[in-house]
Amino acid sequence: MSSLPSPHRPRTLAPIPYVAGVDYDVLDELIGYSLRRAQVAMFLAFHEATRGLEITPPRFTALVIVGANPGISQTLLGGVLGIARSGAMMLTDWMDDRGLAERRQRPDDGRAWGLHLTARGERLVRTMKRRVLAAERRRSARFGSGERRRLLALLKKLAQ
Amino acid sequence: MSSLPSPHRPRTLAPIPYVAGVDYDVLDELIGYSLRRAQVAMFLAFHEATRGLEITPPRFTALVIVGANPGISQTLLGGVLGIARSGAMMLTDWMDDRGLAERRQRPDDGRAWGLHLTARGERLVRTMKRRVLAAERRRSARFGSGERRRLLALLKKLAQ
DNA sequence: TATTGTTATACTCTATAACTATA
DNA sequence: TATAGTTATAGAGTATAACAATA
Image 1 (cartoon, rainbow over the protein chains, first blue to last red):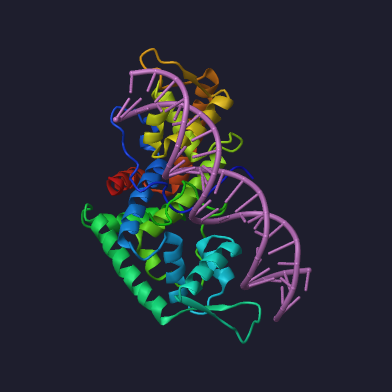
Image 2: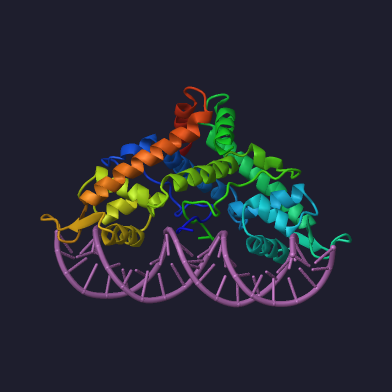
């Protein structure tokens, strides 16, 4: 396969600028390009909202998924995140090392662990959710009534 | 600064799945999460559309920008892309090595190069634009009249 | 002094492939 | 045989910092 893909997050800590005097040509008409710019902007809001928590988007997703699906296996967690098992392991190690989640033995299957949030993990998830949702609302303040809802629906349709 | 950011492109060559039976909790309500899923889907369409051209999103952007702004410097190109000068250099080397763009001396400033597409670069840009626009139209076919336009506008508003 | 291009280096995230234990 | 977890390794893309040449 070609030179492909990578992560989840923008490259710098500043929004991608619209440089005055530069002709953006077809880029201005491409969903893909605006998607990228929007993603950088939203990442910055996310980063600001989770300041001090050492959270990244994949970590956030992993913690939320484990919280909502106690006993989930590493392999399935990787499947949900769209990453390889080895990546799910590193994420799980990260949660485990910090006392946010633990691996419990399964009586039914000796191969797989069941992942569970600790009390500390539960607290962190509550804090993260509160902050991230607040950041989204703040960023959506520029939208008129219903526009946030409509954007969400259009994005889901596009990703389908 | 924390452990931060990275690129432009999704991690795998498959869309992020919605795994049946898994509770996605708050993720379903977050613009940031849907943005990520949409971006992966659009990247796959982009990748498919540019098959055989060895093109990635940053290369596409660089070629389009040089094409529309002949004589642009590497530093400004990096500014438009939102990457460091060293990255703009690697991109320029890539274009130069393949005979797609060339560095020309500037009479007014001995420090900076002026970047220009070659005839071959011009042809590639035409081909890329055609294919990528067709892919976007194909992907937007699921949208009702005006929805693509509305999505573009909402994304721009979000990124502002 | 400031800026452009350049080079070397390090870092992050991810994939791949091989290994083991269990099914 | 197949699957879960694990480990080691490699790759892509980016940033940072230093340097020479020019402004």
